[in-house]
Image (tube, rainbow, N blue to C red; front, side, top):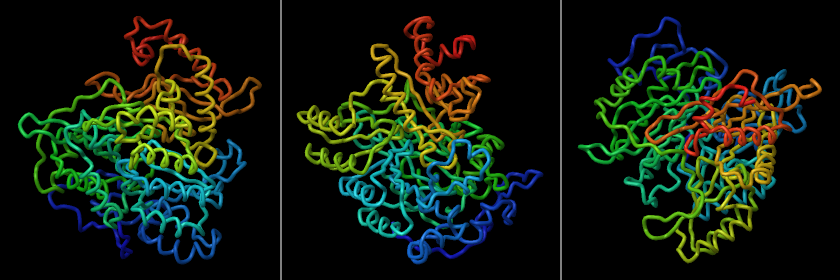
Length: 572
């Protein structure tokens, strides 16, 4: 994508489509559609004062030359995000500092950089470029995230222009990887190769990115906007602002069901079906119409109510759909609900493709890799005949197009670099956010804790027949999808045995995105006072697993079903 420096623009009230606006609510929520153009908080003022995409020019021509101290605060804590940059946490700041300090007081002079990989696709030149950037400029850091991105750390402002140049040379970008804008578009990691896929959604993902990502008209949304387009339900569709999921219409054939209003954090909501069927070639237009509705009607007064989910909850699906249809200028076609899987699909292991070849899915330990490991991955893929990889929204990596006679050798080669295609259930099903190591919002360490938990459970429960998801998060924002895991762990400070505050977790139990075929997901059970210290976490999980296995009514009773019926004492 070629970056074009946009002109400054006021809120585009003129873009609001006539005749489709619902009646305004009594209290102003900063909605542009109702003429509320004056910013109601500092974040909105920053975006109005100067289009966030414009900051690239200053990064390249001023800040990278004059250093970190020259960066204006409104750029540093606002507009930088539109180019995938967050200041990371200053080392050695205490876990409790977040409770008394503004996050900006924890700024280090280094950045996290998020590389945009829509659909999770990386060819070998791109993979090698990311690996090289990690080694040269990011102290060999790299994490695979649950948004199909790769994140780097320890980035200096002086190096950003050169990093961008290297990424752009292979077709990669950091544009709108963060910020109040359309984030990375999730796609099925096996799009185009799956034996179960009817329609490859990749053309729609690419069209959305090419047409709309970096467009100034959609670069100032009330909050971040997360979306996915996938025939298979192998993405977390229920926690996105917008998801398109494959379905066959009885009369019109294959297309996509539309889900809106999902999101987690401190006010979790699951997406709801719009009841509309959309053919593949119309997905980008419907996607854009929904983004425009969010831009014009989304709440801009309070940041904690600015996500699309609040608008959908207040309006209801029928009203929201009517407004979207007004933006499209035509009605949407009613459609059936899609079939849902019994559990999230992560594609780990060796699986056949539709063309007779195979793909190999591997599990990095809680998503942590490195530039060195990514370079070794590229080498292993090339030696075994591959040309690309896919990242998954479960912090996994897939290697497609492997010949049948090469799968065993590739599995062994990947194991040698710490990427396991036959992982233990705990290594396979544990995810973690960035945590206090780099994130200014976190209150506990997560990556190391989660990795240690996996290793401990692999020893303690090696022969126990159970497969549970464990999602570890450093704060309430649920980047690791705490509320929809079998065991969700939300970081907080708790009282240790001596009464002093130590790192620990509030526990959510029995959540999931699809608890049974055809059944929607649900949030985990949260009991008052159900917490564990970080040190006691392995003991707690081990105890809980044994109670579940001893107390379930039959082997068919799921963990979520057991959690839903047992008394609280069994869960402590």
